[in-house]
Image 1 (cartoon, rainbow, N blue to C red):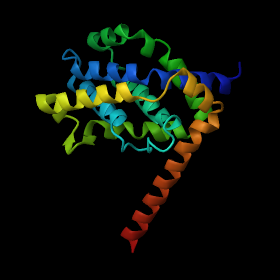
Image 2 (image 1 turned 45 degrees about the vertical axis):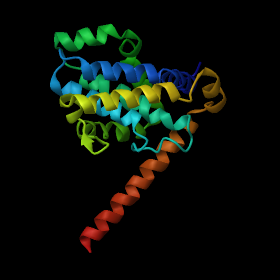
Image 3 (image 1 turned 60 degrees about the vertical axis):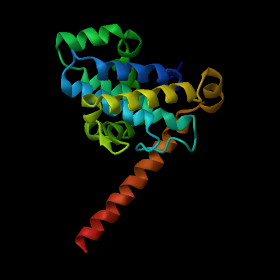
Image 4 (image 1 turned 90 degrees about the vertical axis):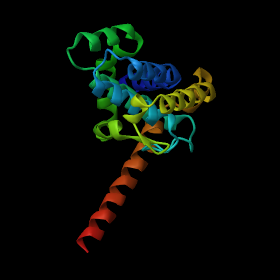
Length: 202
């Protein structure tokens, strides 16, 4: 199997497991043994996945456009839990299905996706200040009612998620299918930044 085929298999499996992976993000958010910063990142990731208004529009191509959610979730949790603390290690050990081969899997993504992966990684810094329903991510840790709202919305997402093994096999057959959506969004973002810069200059 060549690397592109491996990448397709990998992304398919991540898309199918996204509801379960979202639950892991919620578990990290809720784990009071983890550092506050890690929990804020996990909250931001949960918001990113649940929100219909993330960096890459989710609802046009309902299947493939979840790929950024699956990637951002893994990139963020890997980076947030990368410390040598016992609590971070204990959390990683609880979820080998997500963390065991993550380093090698992301290396494969880096190889196939080129500059799209660093572009996605650049979004991680904004996760701790993600806003959802008028509240920033840290508030969802401190406010019980807000937290319940986010958990409920996460449950709705997991229940209504439209991807399974069969739909994804029909939809996702080559790497370009995943990357075209991201390339379009990256180009739109670059244009928007260019326009904003030219307005500042004028």
